Image (cartoon, rainbow over all chains, first blue to last red; front, side, top):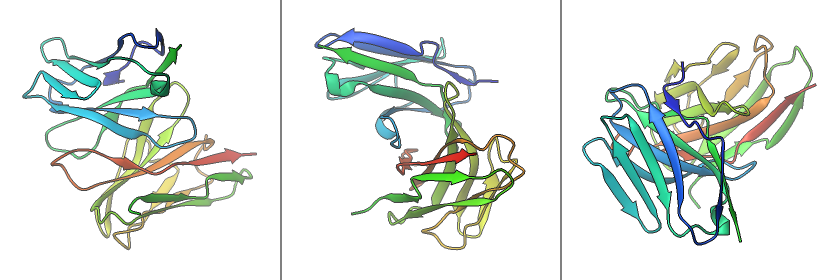
Length: 112
Length: 113
């Protein structure tokens, strides 16, 4: 049972445009959400996070939006750059655990 | 430099053999984790440890074993009981629940021949 879902396995965006990556979750007890970026044959690196008490968090070109009623979060990258091409994972955590539950990932390709 | 070191980066094993993947961190983090990545399945938690001499099973612990004798080290043994061991294995550590952020190593790719 996949508690965190990324329904788009891939996304292709032109350089300079906005990239929107989506993530849905089923467990309403999740209270913390994170996005990770991963290049091939490397470990994931942390990008940005959001607590369930907020609906938006920004860090430079990256913004995460959380819609608790829809159990949906999204990552916006503006403007997209070729170096953003990677696999992006969303992850979620419940209130009484340190464990992160990861989605299946979305491969983003930014072309010139 | 502070970080997480996994070794070896690539490993080949014959069926029926146990193999141990090393994970060392010098970030002074209490919690350490092992994840497995398979194509199309994201990262799945194998084992985690929140403190020395203590660890818990994750979602796919069968066929794996771990130890946490030192804060810096969290080795993973892939035993012959693991039915499908070929995968990319990722070790991570965390300072605790305040940030929730995990710091990952570069991974170890295990191939069973």
